[in-house]
Image (cartoon, rainbow, N blue to C red):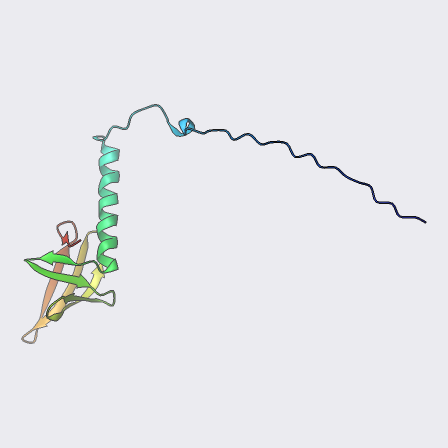
Length: 118
């Protein structure tokens, strides 16, 4: 018995690149930036951006003092250190507390009005 191998020839053709100009993704209608949907989407994007900046520990200003969230449940001042504990971080509000002369003082921050330091 003799084993013969068959020779196979593979032809490779030249592949042409097709330029795609992304027209298939265009609905053909301009976006109405003033529509209720676009306003709502812009608000949601802003809230998500501000919330992410706060949680990542970006510095922000309140009454000309610079603070930051340390990620462990505290807000710290960049100069003096500890400021308050944080109970709740919501979409647009942060609630916390601190003790002043033995009394509990509630702290509430509105993330929409915080000025983040870049």
